[in-house]
Length: 313
Image (cartoon, rainbow, N blue to C red; front, top):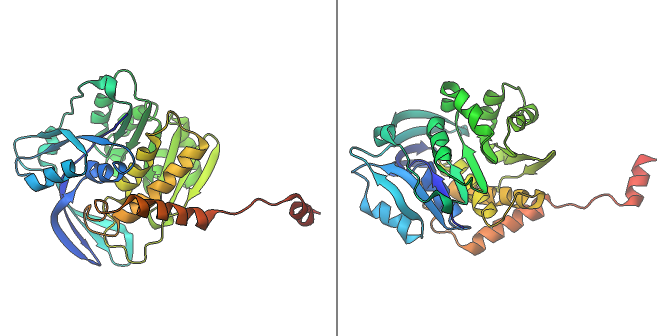
């Protein structure tokens, strides 16, 4: 059972305290698939322009990512440029957003019966709904990501989506915006009531918090001393989560927690370079080593009876 992602393939121009790149390979579907494909064979559906480079298309195929759904439209590929602040890499300014062919993107689903695991990356929620309406039977696992732009402009469509998906990925500010609550915990409670099974709130270098079935899991970030470029870290995080979970038939407390740790691991690799340079070069052993590091960092034993008695009485 493979994993399908529908999102953007783009060219990014990024400036960070560590340097800058112009027109590097990016986009939500790109980061997601180069992350998730380490766990589960991933296919993508996205729009590119006539200017998309052959060597970039070949790169997807080199790593076994399915690109039959990578459709070429007349015009230029989607472009984004941004600037990250030197005093806080969690803060960025978008300089330009040129939708180009993305403005006409209308994904068509073929052979929907074969889709068992689906991730709807950050695109127009109207398109996300149209995708889900084309798929029958319902995939066993559906994840979705969004952003403040869509929350501000198409909140009603997002409200409808929440009851149609299993896992919702939002960052802390987006969760508060969507829920109209002032803190993470009330935000998650409100969002879960809208119908999704799992809410994962991403907090950058502070990790993430997973809310599922009346439980809370604090997932740490893997410590990176010299992050290069945060672009795509959230999509890479989602790729780790969805890629791992796609190997299972259902969501349990244990596998959603492990999946979130793998999400942190993949996000940590993403920030160590511009574009997908680090994601494409990592090994399975490096992934496992970082997973084990995070396990050791948060593992502790419960109080035994003697300790409990001593503390309480």
